[in-house]
Length: 340
Ligand code: KG4
Ligand code: ZN
Image (cartoon, rainbow, N blue to C red; front, side, top):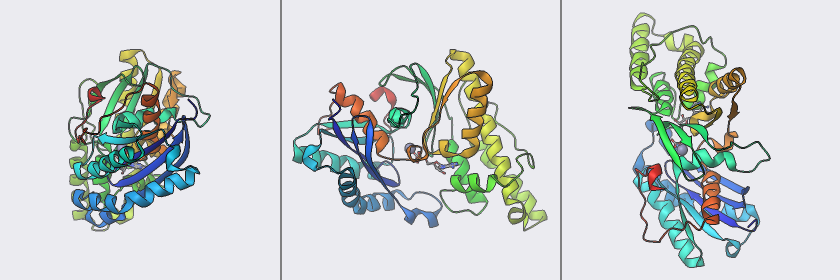
């Protein structure tokens, strides 16, 4: 089984990525990010699919070359079927299907959100979560708390009712005049700031669900009010604003994780998705886990934001169970966990 060699392709949003895995180990993980969206303050779907078309062949070729294998060594091809942007998904899906047909090897469809969770099983010699565990998936498109019963059985316990947490970061950054994606920049400036400088109202949402649209509006009104008094308010207080906003988001997330652990009695807690790269969230989860006696799992930076290695690890587990996909399968922008 260790000879299993999977080529994985991820193209759900604005990163074109290809990876080769041998068993559960990554041989290569190539990511081409699309700078074209920066000046628009968000991902422009039509530009994203065009950029995927330009990137896909060089990215896949580089992944195969870096892995030191030949195409004929591949056992199967895994691809992101959804959720994501339709035009973007179509590029990776069509490419994966054609290559699998050309090489005469199996095709494996992967759910992008399931991949953010199973990224913890990419073998880097680290401790891996044991089932059942809780996973908080925090990205630009999703915010969920998931109970993970096995590689293929996952239940959503709570999710956002409106914006994703990544949108809260990115929209705040836009209000502050920072380029897209603003999450990493808020993280960077927050390190120099005072997290207690400003306070923002936190949403009061029942159960394990989230809401971030009120926070975004609260920040917008706060900034408008302050800049009416002092036009240089943002420039003069950037680090403190970023630190205070980040702390508010950290508090919202940690409160829900704590609630999920109390509700389920599960003390294995993982995070995944682009926002799990945030240093404040990583530190807060580690500290909370130490305080409460949980095992916490935080992915390596390169497996937080969108990447094909996480698609490959799901592909590997599906390959072992021969969960193959028909070439007639189409991309699904709203693919849910239950649809595998
Ligand atoms: O998982 P991902 O790469 O794409 C989606 O599936 O959405 O997540 C992208 C999101 C963006 O909103 C980006 O601003 C956010 O992850 N992000 C961060 C950080 N790094 C990426 N947010 C806060 N702090 C970071 N360090
Ligand atoms: Zn993602």
